[in-house]
Image (tube, rainbow over all chains, first blue to last red; front, side, top):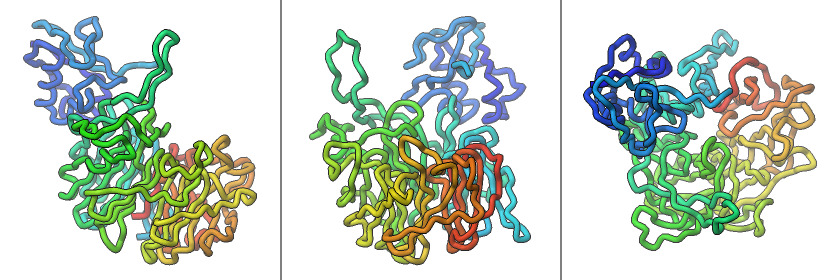
Length: 92
Length: 387
């Protein structure tokens, strides 16, 4: 079981998630996204493109580390991991 | 309907409504989000907005209660196997020069929306896909005949007979990778099976069988940036418009000037008057009644995309581009450097409205003879539609 934490930006599109503790059964980031899509239909296309790749300006961290596999999201998730889904900051 | 204008901006959707004889602006949704295009389906009355979220990608939004609430529609996605040829990137010194590469297509931008037969919604996208819904927008499908057109290298879904040569170039409007985009969708009022699309940068294509087959409609077009100015492909149409009441008449504002067709887009004729400032720009409005009448908002040049000499004017022709009038009454004539993007100028009978990338919105109720400033502090304006 991993805990998912979202940037506040995503709550404007998925207000039903606000204030919810998001705990998902997942062993990879791809499974985390799949579970989030199940909880909030449409979520996956906000975070990934239609080929399943992480969008350029989105970051996912597992605990302190950003995911390495942005194409297939194969990075492992451990029981008790905290997964952060954030917008990438590119300066500005 | 001439009493309401739907305005898409870089930071939200606005309605401009004529209330008690005054045009009044109000926020109508999508605050903080990029809205490339907003339009109303005349048959279903649904409002559609093409959003560009930046971080979160392009999303289609719709309202079935005339703008009171909006929600995500079925999202447009490129199907598995959709690929397009991309020009080679600059190479490192030690690497052999590249050739066009096949790139997986993903949705980069929803750019324009058009409506055909009742329940039919067309969406033009970057990287160059036309998506059509025949169920009022509940589902969309990529038009494969256009996607696989020979001008683009053929069928890269299967690879059968495909080439590595594309005549479709890109547009900076893609905002990410350099890819072509469909910005104009014109459904013939006589026959919804006939659709013309215009692509930056390729030119105009036409179907007369509801999208099953397509052919180029670029005869007479001239460009100023290719070795062969009369090449069949590679034309940078900025917008095309058709006169609804006299539908053999088409107008095109192009990177290389203003073009007019009086023969149903079979041939085009350049009608620019550069010495009068009638040449470069993005939008064009065709009159709803008279085919020889059209309006432009010219810019200085491709190298200087601003109003000309700090003074904003709308150009009108009533004789098929033989002569042009400069309509300046009510428009700023000092220190105005507005640029009007391609979808930000529209007309409905005698009313016209345009918005600029500097957030100014102007309306005329008398065919452009005089103008009123309606808003000056809107976000950069992408789209203006009477509806």
